Length: 568
Image (cartoon, rainbow, N blue to C red):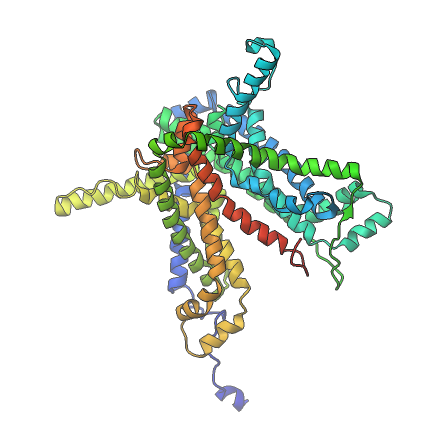
């Protein structure tokens, strides 16, 4: 007993539980609390305004456009969900479990359409398929038709056309996660199904698909969230969704209250998607029960079936990337002078500046959050991290509406104080400036850096933290001297993902940017809206080229994700 009383206390190591009264009063907790507050403020602002509506505005929305907005949004989400599930799951199954010509190329090529924003592909296909487009013009010339009454051709600017555009560029979310899940399934389970008399498709429906269901649901939720966030496509196709309604309320009715109420309706729809995704994955985990993992070799397909598999994998790549990229490249080469004279250089500089600052800030905050959770694994900190990650699930239009109001209030308070104290006016310091745009980017894309860095930290054994702390180093010193050099790859990956998403972001940039301040996304939007795709093709092609970086990273990750193998 005496030995136990006089035994010296062990040093407090990284990851150890902090004392009860001090774990709340430290910089890590307070910093994470501040991040969570900044992220939650736009959402709380939207809810606060929408719950105290002006009766006449709400009645007008109910009697006129609200149900149209809600109905079109639901139809769009349902169509995109079906399309992305079908293409993403089918192609993932084919390239994982079957051998056919081109399979090794399709493994990475099926991810390439993810680099094309939905609004860019909408502009290119409208230019190609509209009445004045190349395809219909060629048909009229060949068959001698003189007007639209002489023949029938599907209209691209419809809700069906919007569903097709979203599906072509968003199915890679489902493909990526479904293929990763299929790669982790042992072929022994599938062989048992085949020996019991089930053919390839019955094995897919009975065994492969249920085991991959949690991953597929996550991919579908990401595709649906991107659909709900879109503005450029639905605006160009005149599909009246909730996102388009927010812009109409703000710029058409000049009513922040109406925009907030529509934002709340869209927010509720986003929350439904997130809740359904969580419920669908609850209790649906499948693990290999045998000690030895047997990798999938792939079944060789007969010639006819191999040709069908080749076509099924080729069409999404051809329609989702090759065709729009070829159109943009042709226009960019022919009309490059018009693009340069039209403001491409300034827009590119603005995009690089905003995306660069936002990515650096987001990576720094994400590193702070991930390391704070590594030091203190407590439920309050985990809850704050969850709140800080809500921004990615919120459409940019919602965050923009919710950010403008508190930013304007703070600007007015600062200006009022400076006038009274020093007799000078500070003007706008947040709202209507690039500061607001950068803050919006950080709030929306923070989860990308946080998730990537947290995954990187999880690969570093805690024994290294314990050894460094036992030698007397502080947590910040351990982070700087031990973890930071080991996390360079994760930090660069996180920065690249945030950078590219900032380059593509349209609705938030439109609402928060300063007057006459164009980025590549708004530059392309303004010209394409005026039916001048040729003059902005270089900007659109630059956005697509920037999106290739994450695709390369995802390709590398998916080829090394199979247990026990370095390539898929």
